[in-house]
Length: 426
Image (cartoon, rainbow, N blue to C red; front, side, top):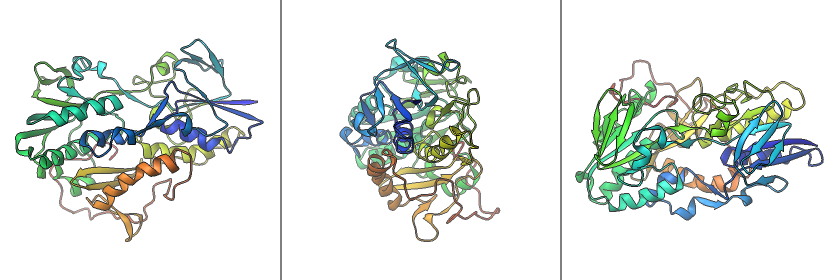
């Protein structure tokens, strides 16, 4: 009996086991997925909870039913992987041996990496990258009646790189709807040179912050947070005051990856960016947010990766070449407030371009344009996630990025303001 062990039963891990179980004969392969959680979260919903768009019950379900029959679920945390012995050591003292290992434990916020941030959480400082954090922020926003709101990114990379921008756009609409917008000063703080960094996108989206009277503070590398004083301080000694800080802390991979000697300085597993095979061990893959592949850490990326990983894994275990290269494809809806959203589609080599998706002319979705159809499609994706994506059913969209429906604007098209650019990878 050959043994596949998958660490993590989140989006990527669940898709891996759900897609592979029908492909690997049960009399020849056992599949085990390891995760200490008892619930599975639809993480894109965390963005919507503070604004009342989603209730908490819409973003959480019991974990076991999300995993296909024939897959063993071990409810435990990982202590260490011994790659030489092909053994996973769990924190409860038990061990699992494997023939092949897939690391899919994602990335998590680490507020303790920024002095003062962890201590301030739950006071005037909040985050929305966890269920508990989003729930607490829901109450904080409901009680907020005016002042300085700062939306802050500590460091890149982060899970869903557009989410902080989405939050500040939704906050603008939220306060306007409550009749408080003229009493709220909104500031977006980023370590990048701007809110946007890709030229074509900037030509289309460059004035989005300015039109909403949102102040941009670029190149801000945070040194510390003082919740009591209500200040953010950068390493170059700039200070930003806040009454409410909505922060995206440093993101890192799981600590067992560092203990196992399998990760980089942020605990991400170095992989071949096309096959997702570990650079250190040809029996280990890393998928989704757990790898150091230079693609966005987003659910759509996990989806496209796993579809191609399936073919590569089946070839690899038979000693055949892996020919289904992942191209860095990402596809992201960007909420812009007032019932509208943008759609961006890109990969390692091609930046977001205007056009229609997935079909030319008819779309029905528009790229780099705010539309209500994009917004409703993003909301509809929650059903698709629970009923199609997570169970491992194939979606009718191209896995690799297609140029169908896209167009490149003329090189001499007017530039957007220099201060506003699309984040790296966007």
